[in-house]
Image 1 (cartoon, rainbow, N blue to C red):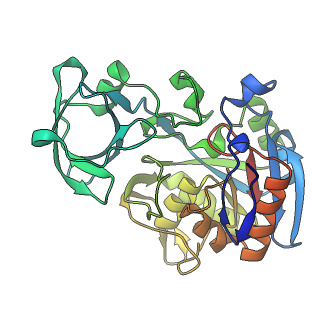
Image 2: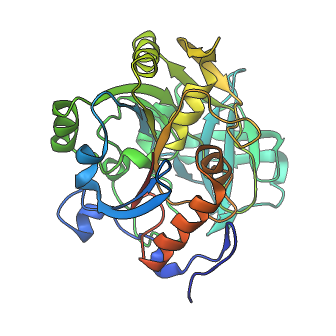
Image 3: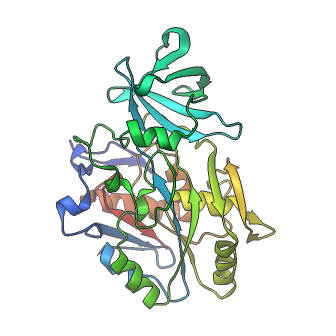
Length: 336
């Protein structure tokens, strides 16, 4: 099957372009991935390796990373399904997804109860959208329960289990994500050192990402985030001095833009419903390091808010032609 673009982002992804294993299995290290670079000012597209990143970021620029740790958020059930624990909600409830093989389980659940390992019973209160459920887990700490009984979420293009360590980034310190904030996965201590030595700042935010939406065009639902005082000051200082603020991942864009107040960034936390799109473009983020997204993904709308649509379309055409790899273990795309 070939992959072709028929409209700005209407394409069927060739299964051969789905990364099926971590980069360090395919190559020498996590950083051994390719990086497509889209230069917004020049309107140019270039092919690089991720190890070249320190030479492509300017002194005075600021990289903002997500320090959320990936949970082993997939739990087997007594019914043969799996439960994916997605996101906490402001009232203490959680959103979960039932999976039946490669797709979500969209049928009814007898008596609304799902039996989990360890004798736990999950009561499904109501649907949230068409594939998620609202529930109140009967155990005190969801991360602790998942540590005992869960595995990392994986989809059909990954044909074996990988340890949860394969789904952590170099910046992961705050447990909470259902799926890896994967844009930062190629970073290694050596590349971080080279960036800092080149005069590039690196600061964290936290955004606990929920389950991916692979089946339908769904807007992101509220996710918990925190932008600390130090990061807020660093972002404002970089903007004031003419540096670029480059988000490492779409989660970082969402968190930073949720903390914009009076034209700058202020310390903030809570559940954000902010959706960045051409209709509501970013105010502080100048560039983005990200993976390659599915044709129907709402993330592409965020990319269009950061980059001219035609240039973005040409970038995706270039990535497909050059056989870049998609998904969490795949290659990356720098838009700056």
